Image 1 (cartoon, one colour):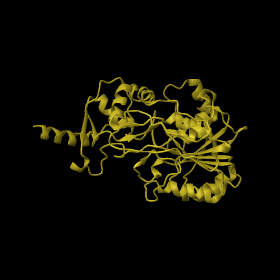
Image 2 (cartoon, rainbow, N blue to C red):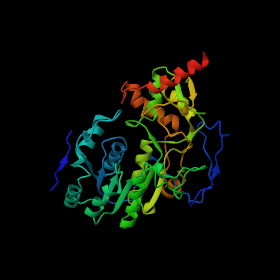
Image 3 (cartoon, rainbow, N blue to C red):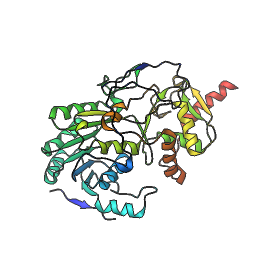
Image 4 (tube, rainbow, N blue to C red):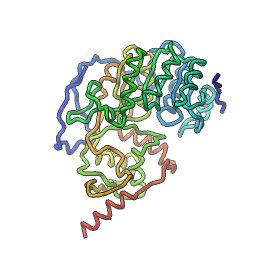
Length: 379
């Protein structure tokens, strides 16, 4: 028997992208959609269709997305259990969180310690405890999900964190939920999980974020830019810098995860979740500078083919146009992101970098390779 511990302490029309989109620094593409409009309710009045308290299991939950999601669910009155290996504290006080709010959350969050790849333990512990809803935040392979479903035959909903990275690369954007997917992508395990959920006949919902940013981000998304801005260094951007991408704030993502809970319109559906606007790489560098109160950044463009970076990653984004429509989530769920890009980056900078706490040490190795070659070419 597992031990439970209380912690005390449909489809939009598309447009073809061309290189003429040179001034696309945060501009919004206007799509003609056929989804029925719904009234959006802001975060402060978040509507959850689930009419009663649910016994909820979050696979993961101690980093980034799960940290914000678990707090929302606890505030909504649900009994929330985090399934983790126990290597990180189940609750840490968030930047800006009051002592009272943290104490309230800490007194209610539950912990089930184990390894999700220990399938026998997963089956026995989950069967013993029983859960109404599962939020799978850290699942990567379908084989990790099957034991959970088998252990919970009366499960009401399985809510899965997938990725917009499953879409097949295309010249026609933004990606929509009905677009072709790439079975060979590095996220193929998430595609296989979505297929498994469908084949098992469970009530499932899949969320496909694009790039996620915000406080506590463990991936070097905005952090990569902030390190260079704070050090007063030029920002090396591959190729033209007009590649268009998209970022979604972690708190908006957490709200979307709560919005699908018990929502009939989310049953067996996939939703892209991200920011409403798209941004170029150069535009993102400038947005980060504005968010952190830095002067206009010096941006250096380079051809990645001129360098051998080895295993080091020279830039945090894929070097291509990559963004997805969130119109389905807006019009079917009534969800809408509350953070615009600069506001969201400011939130991230103030709560993390502005406090003088960097999550990772800066590595400017690839930058120096690029800048050294530029100086040679200029001499």
